[in-house]
Length: 173
Image (cartoon, rainbow, N blue to C red):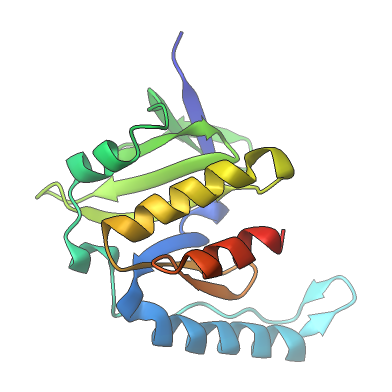
């Protein structure tokens, strides 16, 4: 039986893995996002939205290969299919790769023509039953390269080379 994982197109890179060098940029963007949201918050939504600027730092700069990510995440089963959802449409999301347990415990990535990871994000929903798994995933990523997590939804940046930051982030859920 094929294992299939889904991500909604709005979740693409919303909980993003980036090089640690992107931290200053991410913190500034988070300030802009939440500042604008506060000014334009209305009873039934927002009167304006903030579109993030393009990040000058991509995960590509740390040079992690597709094979290396597959190797360090080998404790997570590989998904056979990755599908993207948009409204009621579901389509194959080639060439997106993923390893994980389910839609709420999944690591997604794309690779470039040289097999280097060009984007990485998480399908993350932290509950008591999967806290230990998320700690392991984030720690493994931080041990692979100097990486950070940018949780654009929560407005949080986490240094994945710092186990205490990882613990505090997971505990906050």
